[in-house]
Image (cartoon, rainbow, N blue to C red):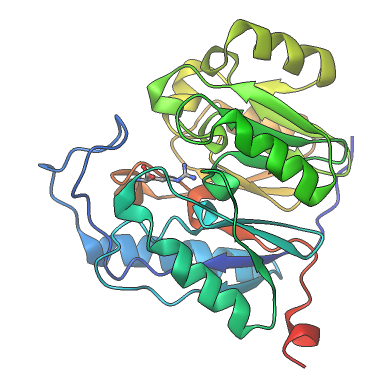
Length: 278
Ligand code: ARG
């Protein structure tokens, strides 16, 4: 199968104030020291990689006191130019919503305040046929119905059961949106959700336990190039076999905060910023 890259627009937030002060996920140990300068350089390399592939990367200004703000994917979900804001489950992250809101409004884009808790693209993924939606740890099922109505797309609710894979984007990634091709780690999902995935995506790539544990599914694909942590060794040949071009990136420092490549990259689908800013 041959795949094609399409130009994307992303929103990223420099980890200026990145730190691990909590243990909201099993990935995080507040006693392990964080090298913020190294986190910044890993982040810059990721941003430059995306720009080098021809994508637009916008920058959300970091705010002090918000150590998780680098995980911009959690602040909103953007589809067809419509923005559904996040409502964080941890109070410590709640003020990030205001930063996202301010950024979108300053670009002339309406920001819809959600009624239900949801952590943006952390728990929502877009394919041609569905809005895939995670629940079980952060985003409740009630939010899925809200997203379905807001975006006018059928939601496929998927139950996450392993605390290491607390967000959908740690357990599943969309490789080729147009072709409806995804990769996921079956054990991260409840049996009924696994059955749904098998039925709807019979040709999906299944990631091994070790590739999932390397946060290999926390990946960003433009339809052809797949940026993923360089330590997810098994995914590289598997992606190449399917006609993708995997690109390994080192996000070791950012992973101390519980996120990988994808968490740092919010996709702005269908937003024409130049048109919106006039
Ligand atoms: N420490 C952050 C949290 O627990 C990590 C979020 C990572 N983002 C992601 N999309 N998985 O909320």
